[in-house]
Each structure stands twice: as structure tokens, then as C-alpha cells.
Amino acid sequence: MIEIGVVLAGGTGSRLLPLTKRLNKHLLPVNGQPMLHWPLRTLAMLGVTRAVVVLGGQSCGEVIEHFGTRYDTGDGSLDLVYVHQDGAGGIPAALQCAFPTLEAMHADRVVVILGDNVFPAVPRHLRGELDGADDNAVVLAKYVPDAASYGCVAIGPNETTIGMELVEKPIVPPPAGAAWAAVLGFYALPMFHLRGVLRSLVPSARRELEIVDVLDAYRRKGMLTVLPTTATWIDAGDPPGYREANDTAFWSRS
Ligand code: G1P
Image (cartoon, rainbow, N blue to C red; front, side):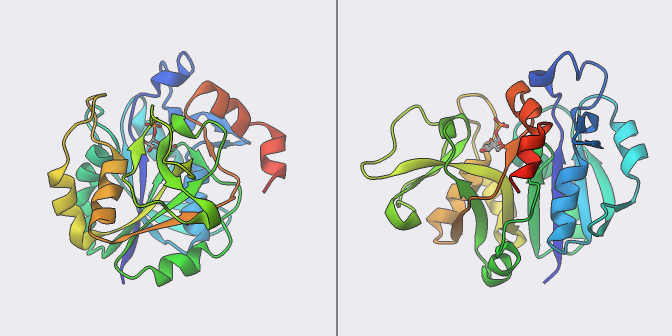
């Protein structure tokens, strides 16, 4: 199976203004490295050797200058190709930008990580779970106190997923006996179904295509594996997350 990483680093970083007025969000320092180093390192630690980086927003050229076409993360190297995303449109729109390049690379499966999602360590067993997933899409889910600020899946006792749709930033309570768990910005998606799934999407109320709708399309086909995780994780794309990602306490939790 040809597995290609995809790092989604488009967007303007508006939640981190004024830091991102001129500088690409993914170059902001996080624990002594530009933010984008961390998702690239996560992919490398999973054994991924080639990745497509979708760029957008300010100073994209500086991102390319920094990371180049072969990047040594210190925990494995990656060959990188870059794709530019004009405007926003949501995570699936960024995947659509990457799609022709992924086809040209003959990808069978893509391992997608958001450019502002930081994991100090690769969750144990993740590589094995990805290898065992066959044609299923895989997503990580974690209980966090502010789960409703993220894409969510309802998880019941014994970490069983409740058979209901995934929801982006739910405003309704979870089903009885379940709790909302945040869907982390890490997804493995088989290419075979991805084109059709991306074409079937309609914009949400916030006028974006939503990654939860991509995952839900796989769920409806019976092709979604939700992996509950306790891995240390942070979405560094807003001020509280950015501060936490730079906090030594965050790194000592891994
Ligand atoms: C995005 C996704 C959401 C996911 C989150 C993880 O949210 O839409 O499903 O849980 O990343 O970081 P956004 O950063 O656009 O609010």
C-alpha cells in the first residue's frame, strides 16, 4: 500500500492575530521549532516518508524555504511537495487541492494531519492500528473538557462509539449514556472512496466543507474506525492552545 502524508497548513491563522499579520501561522515558534515541525515529526515517527503540504495564507514561500523538499525531523525524514490553497473553504477543500498530486503519487491511502495539531509523542499502537484498518478510514478521538469546541463523536461506556453521526462543534448534548469526545486533527483515509466522498459534500452553516462530514460518509459505508486515545494533544491554532503548546507542562505530559 502506498501511504502518503498530507499536512494541511492553509488558512490565514486569523485566530492568532496579530502574530499572523505577516507571518504564516505554521512558522510561529512552538517549543523551539516552527509549529509545522511537529505534525511533520508525527508523520515521520509513524514511518511516513513522503508528504504533501497544503499551504495558504501569508508568507508561504518562507515555509517552503524553511522545510525544503527533504526535511529531517530528527525522528525520521520526509520528502515534501507543496500545493497552494487559494482561499479557505474547510479541511475537505484543502484535501481537494491535494487530490491531483496524491493521484500522481499513486497514493492508496492518505494520513492527514492538521498543521496546527501538536502531539509530543505518537500514540502507542497507532502504527499497528493503521496497518490493521484495511480499507477503513481511521480517526482519533479523545475526551477533553471542551470537546464541543471541536468536531465530536459520541462515545459510550467501554469506549464504544454510539452509532450516530459525527458533529462539528455540537450545540446539543450527547445521546443518553454517552459523552462527546473530540475528533483530533489526524485521519487516515483510503483514496479509493475519497474522490466520491469529497464530491458529495455540501457546505455547513459556517459555509465550509467539514471533515466530520467526510468521516461520517465513511461511517455510513461501515468503513470508519474511531480510535479512542489518551494521547497528549493540542490544537495550537488559537491563543489558549498556542500558549499551552508552548508550556513545558504540555511537553512533560508525553
Ligand atoms: C478542525 C476540525 C475539527 C477538529 C479540529 C482539531 O476544527 O474542523 O473537526 O476537531 O480541527 O483541531 P477548527 O480548527 O477548524 O475549529
